[in-house]
Image (cartoon, rainbow, N blue to C red; front, top):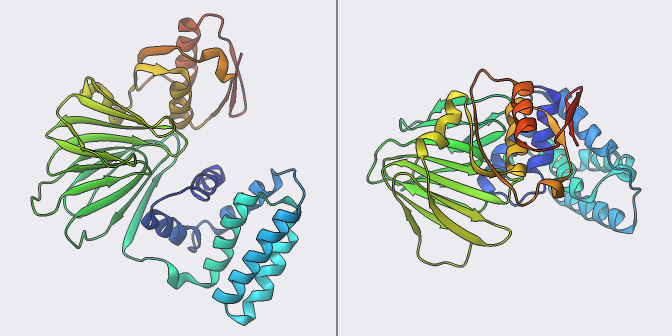
Amino acid sequence: MANKTIHTLISKFFGNDLPEAVRCAFGKWFVGGTHQQEKEEAMLELWEQVPAEADGRTIQELNKLHDRIQINSRPAVRQSIYRRMVRVAAILLLPLIGAASAYLIMQHEPNVLEPAWTECFVPNGERKQITLSDGSEVWLNSGSLLVYSAKFEGSQRSVYLNGEASFRVAKDLEKPFIVKTGHMEVEALGTVFNVEAYSDSELTIATLEEGKVRVDTDMEKGEPIILRPDEQVVYNNQLKTISKVIVDAGKVLQWKHGYLTFQGASFDYIVKTIERRFDVTINYETGKFAGRSFTMKFRPDEGLNQVLDILKEMVNGLNYRIKDNIIYIN
């Protein structure tokens, strides 16, 4: 796994308010024996990106960390861990203290992790299909993480998603299938649907192609939303707004086959999708494109330059240049 992917994983998942099962599963991978050098380098890179020096609050947080180490770690490792933390204190961003402390403590306390969950992470620029133990088929889009039980024991089949996935659910009337995200839960018995829930987006979107699903959000509890084929619910977790619209669900799910399809999408949304698809970073002035929406479709064989050229045709005055893996739009 590329170091950039490790960097993205750490910065995306630490500090976010994610379900406990997701944190445990990610922690299991994070402190595991694979990609150890890349993890260390990614942590160091994150630390070195922070120009601020340690202040009173940083030291206070480090003292809290020290207390945690005293409680959770064996005596032989306490001082070693704390010395490592103090050594990088001057370049620690406060949210990263949580990441660093979890990393260092879990290195010595692996039993705190839940072994019953499995995770599947798909890096930017890739897509992946997996089959769950109940026979349900899942397509995962670029930059997505799915956490699921290996056996689906209990009264329901719950999976946790950060990113975008398409589900073809195996029927089991006694065990409902539930997709949980940071702001939405989608429940189905036997159906085909799509859920988009990236942690860096304010939108969580559920789209139904076949069957019927029930959608709940983290707003104040009310009547759940029932979706029927070709219906889509869009939840804005910042504005706390919900809308239900009619769409062509088949087109929404075409990303599984390599298509990029946008129906009335904002420029910000298009940019983030391109970043994940082609594993690039795009720098641009958000305000210049606010309030506009675009409908367009790109074939699987169209590369990054072709996509950008079409954007250039559609957006008056847009120009771009590419340097290394960064795209500058002006």
